[in-house]
Length: 337
Image (tube, rainbow, N blue to C red; front, side):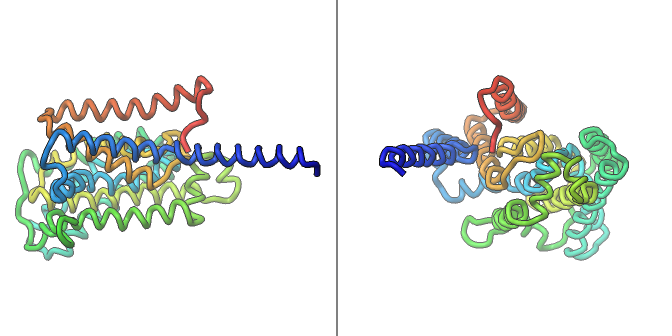
């Protein structure tokens, strides 16, 4: 090979390396990290108490329960489906748990009752979608109303507050210093979710189903079985979130978890998971949860009403869905990776 050819090949290699590093630098997770740092700085300027470890711990607690459900929801959306019923599932699980506690049953059964109720809700969603072929958005809108309606039918405007000793530990306990039980639980589940999605055959099957379900079925993947399992997973995650939320609040009301489905789906989509399926990372979902917590905390510092916070959340969801779609339509981007 001539000297000139070697020089050209070396220049091409260096150029390719630069583009590779640039692609890594501007990936979605990097942009989320930059947004977190900016919001962190703004909150620090707005409040002299923000840099306290206990204040930062409160930020984590405010979003951890939603983030736990978002981890499971990420699997469902990557598989090309969606679950709108998580808020209603949380409410129904909390009501079941409150009734079991009022009956005087021990703490382990109280917690297991919520998980079992979540599992039952997930099985119903999975049956409707994977077996009866009802579109997931239609099926889960229906079950969202069904689960919430049952909670109101059982409770009315009542409140359940009789819980066994030690129940408050789940939502109000700390492992060490300002590190809460909820945060440790979320980190542990996040590590497991990331390992399953990115490093196991099951994770690759889920991504394949979201990318092309027909080709996945023809290649031998049990598409319906995987989809059923994912909706069961979301139901159990909602049951776990119900335990943590009810423990933190110290009471059960049928309105508990109202509107959480919007926040949870926003976290997932903001984390870079494509609403079309087949694309997404658990790291992105975790960063998006942290960003949502910081944004909501910052709005709280400004005494912004809850309805305005909902408007901001809805606007964030529209932006993260509409902007990439518009860029892709006009050929300005190839989508998030």
